[in-house]
Length: 386
Image (cartoon, rainbow, N blue to C red; front, side, top):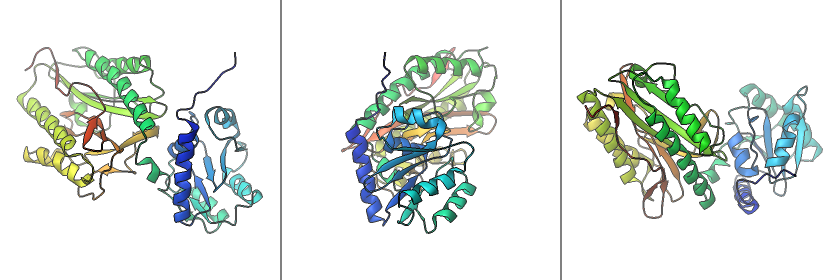
C-alpha cells in the first residue's frame, strides 16, 4: 500500500506565510533570503526531520523556493515538504561552498542576499566562511520570525491539541509522586502518557526535580528517590507536528512546611496576576510587572530573577520556546496583539533547598486572554495537606 504523508497545514497556509515573508523581503531590499533556523524552515516549507542539526538552507526568491539539504535528507524532505525543488550536498562536500555554487548557477549570487545569523545549528565559522563567499550579504535575522509572532487559527488548533497531550503527561507524573519512587519513575510515567496521547518527539526532556534538586534551575530527573517532606517540580511540553503546549505544576509529599505552602500560594497568585494582565494593547513589561509585583511584595524578589513568560509555537530540540521572538520581561515595551501565544512559568527556587513553579500556555484574544492548558492550578500534596 502506498504511503502518504499528511502535511501539518494546507498548502494555502504555507503559501500565505511565504508571500507575507516575500513582502517583508521587498521592504528590506532583499532579493534572495537564506533561511537556516530549523523552526523557520519547517514553518515555511513543512520540513520535519530528526536530522535538523545538519546544515540546511531554504532559499527564498520572489518566485521560487529551493530547499538545500544533506543528500541523506532528500527523501524526508520530499516526503514532508509542500514545495518540490530540492538540491543536496554530499557528506564529503563543504555545504557552504555548494550553496554558493547553487546561487551562482541559478544567477542569484549577484542579487541582494539576506542571511539569517541566528540559526542555532550553523556554526559561527560556517557563517563567516559563507559570508566571505557571498560578498555583500546582509543580516536578515528576524524576517521569518516577524510572521511567526502571530499564530494562525490552524496553529492555535495544533497548540490546543498539544496542550491535551501535555495534560495527560502531567496527570500521570503527579500520580507517580510517592515516597520511594524515583524522579525517573515520575519522568517515565509522563513520557509514556504523552506518547500514548499521541505526542511527537519532544524538544527537551521533561523537567522532574525533587527535594534539594528542585531548588536548582534547569536540572531534570536524576535518579533521586523521593522522600517525605520533598517538593517535586514537573515541567512538560507535549508536541504535535513541532508545536508545543508547555505546562508546569508542583507537588509535595507530607509533611509540608508552612513556608512551602506560603510560597506555593504566592506563585499561583502571581500566575493569576499575569494572566489577568494579558490583553491586546498591554505591553510585555506590564504583564511581567503584574506577576513580579506579587512575588516581590511577598519577599521573594531574590528568587525571581527571570522573565515572566515567552512565546511558544513551532520548535525543535533543545527548546520549545520562542523567547527570541517575544518575551514577557521587565520594562519590555512590546505591545500584545491577538494571536500571540505565551508560556507563563513563574517559579521560585531556594537554591539547593526546594523549588516550586506553576505555568500555563495562553493565547492573546481580541478581548483578553484564553488559557489553553486545562489542568487544576493547585498544589498537589501526597499523603496529607500539612
